[in-house]
Amino acid sequence: MAETVTRKRIEILVDTPLAPRITALIKAVDISGWSLIHVDSGGGRNGQWQQDDVTGAAAKTIVLVVASTEKANHLVDALVPLLDSYRLLLTIGDVQVVRGDRF
Image (cartoon, rainbow, N blue to C red; front, side, top):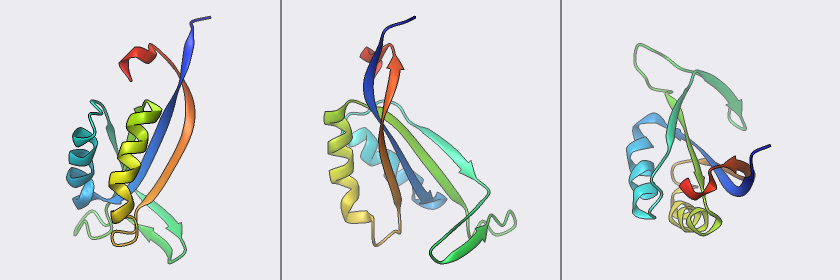
């Protein structure tokens, strides 16, 4: 089996128009890679929502990042001021990756 190393997986659920601001923060803390994943529907404390393809009013995106612990901590510090004002959902967990030198 290939050797693995532990890295941090960060998922940020954002309103789609905010995604460029989040990716700018990712770049600012020297994380080179991320993925944007479109979300069609969901639910939470304020009830259910569904993407409206006509207006895009409820469009949501998951920003997915895998990074070293140090860079992940810097990103979280940069995101904390936005959590309440933009109602972000931020999750962080350990993940095993192959080719850990890339993260």
